[in-house]
Length: 174
Image 1 (cartoon, one colour):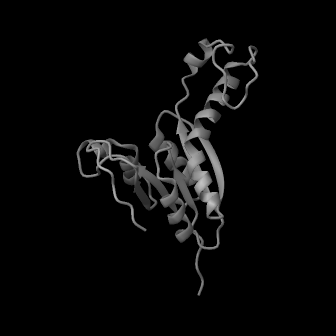
Image 2: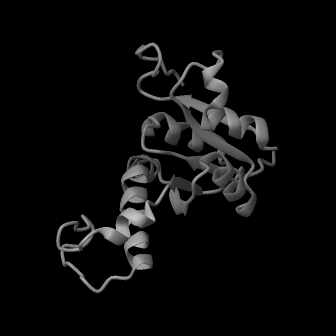
């Protein structure tokens, strides 16, 4: 029996429960041993330009560089924030023998950046976190709801460790 490999995009801000996401990916990817993991980061360029590098140091690099250009500062910021967001998912994927193709995307509209990245990698499925109850009016303004509405792909929403508006802990069973 032929099993088609599914190309998956996991979009995270760092709140997705890593273990369940890795387990979902393992069940869905077929023969493919790679998943694309991304995060969208809003880079505050004007703020970064005003910082003195001796005051703000990257946790990725302990050496201050007072000659860093605005673009270099923005790139470092994007990498730092991006790495923090994707590390838990990447570690969980590695634990189930799945490689992660990591992408840090700069943008002001996370939903649009996720949809564009899914198109760019020719994804078959997008996995996102859901931190709000879906059947409230406010939830339809969320990034995950906007991706569901505007994407032509199937979207799998995985509840985070805590649902924002009720402070309930969701039960995740596989």
